[in-house]
Image 1 (cartoon, one colour):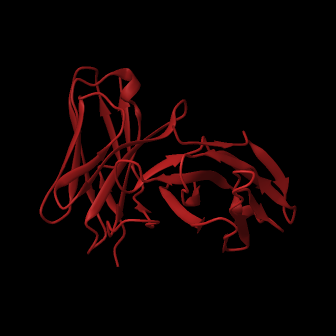
Image 2: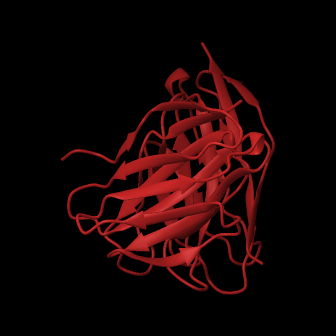
Image 3: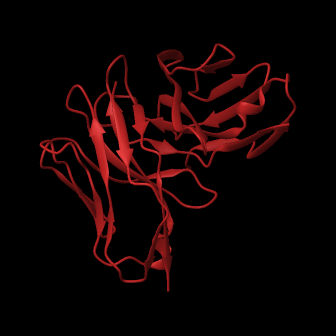
Amino acid sequence: KAGVTQTPRYLIKTRGQQVTLSCSPISGHRSVSWYQQTPGQGLQFLFEYFSETQRNKGNFPGRFSGRQFSNSRSEMNVSTLELGDSALYLCASSLGTPANEKLFFGSGTQLSVL
Amino acid sequence: GNSVTQMEGPVTLSEEAFLTINCTYTATGYPSLFWYVQYPGEGLQLLLKATKADDKGSNKGFEATYRKETTSFHLEKGSVQVSDSAVYFCALIDFSGGYNKLIFGAGTRLAVHP
């Protein structure tokens, strides 16, 4: 069974640009969540999608958005990039049923904003 | 709000030494607790979990016991190997407002030398 796939693996952008990251969950998983990992702030929850609906959202500005398609694949978009957006962005998938779910993480997309 | 605090690293040990990584949490309810591990260049992998007080999670020689009275979930291993070198994250599931929102500690880097 294929794992969680995130593309691209590395990305370099400049301030003011926008970027789209992609995540393909494990087959059969309907929930996709996104996390930002930085040396200073650690791992922070961005948002979670289930069956194309955003169920939960972290404390990030509106520049960060996402969506989920009918095949459960998800994209995350960051507009008007800032230097502080440089981070490893991790996607995790799960079946999406409540309580004590095991999340499967992808290897992440390393975003560098210059 | 809910939070997780874990000991700062790096932790440097010789092979076959005993490992303890401390983790304490603050939560309003009864969260489920997790330890995740991140190897260089990879995403996070679930190491073990515990869903209620006095539960012991175990995997690959690692153990952690959910202690409600001390709000702790310390990670232990009796004899570490070089291959255990990684960053370890303690986390809890926050069910307030939705599913699958993990709250992570800052991470503890472990380096094991031969």
